[in-house]
Length: 160
Image 1 (cartoon, rainbow, N blue to C red):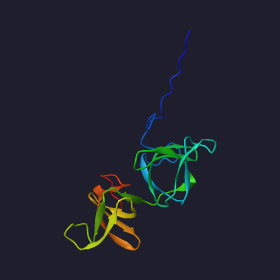
Image 2: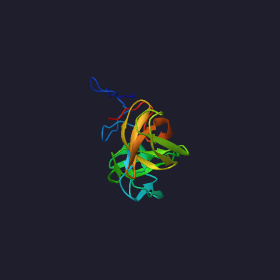
Image 3: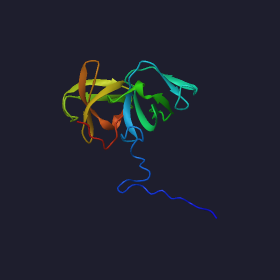
Image 4: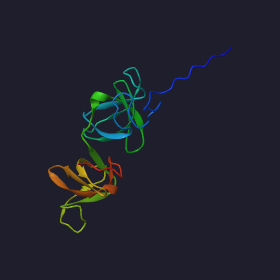
């Protein structure tokens, strides 16, 4: 005779909640940034796994897509994934310029004064975002950029 045991979730809990990390209970996926100037990206979630590549830009935006113990599986702008130790990432929000260049305006309005321009692959600190615009800073310059030209913030995301 074959017995099968079915485990039901506790009342009010889903058996599998893919929108929250099992370790941190933070949203998945979520954007973070690189805390260090150098970070080894590994094939799996331990020091014994091979290093596939190395990130070398502090503040580089990454997307956390999975968690395992002290390790976070991240994805970069090109879609490459790998594992980083949690101590190498920060909750500080940054974004990467995707377009050849983007304009930074004094207000979230394309008719307002142009403060600066940022070129492709420049890392910008996210200060706040509304539905279409993000207030950003880099190298002492601040301004509002269209969200559509940035990678590191979701199209529907509001940051205060």
